[in-house]
Image (cartoon, rainbow, N blue to C red; front, side, top):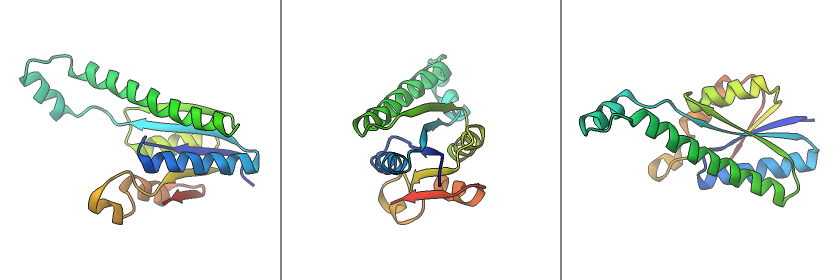
Length: 148
């Protein structure tokens, strides 16, 4: 049915739940897995604020922090995959809006299913389908499994 499953995660608790669900599905179907996390580009406003405070390396600091966070997120996903005996590739996509990075990776890797959490936010936003998830569902030319 599905040969290659892309699992998108932002490292949130719900994102981790989607990772586990996607990995269990991949195991049942004997499918290949690509786990992806996406880091948005730095904000010029944030960089300007940092420069005002005398920090002229704000872009580098942001990119370094984003890389460290992505490594931690993808390691958790890899550890989960190993614990249920599923092989998973990982990818960190930088400087893209999350939905765009997820869709690009699904296309580049020829994934035939995208698995992601319904949202990655807290509070009132929990009631609504997350904006990135909604965008992926709307724009994807392949099936999207949304994990609540």
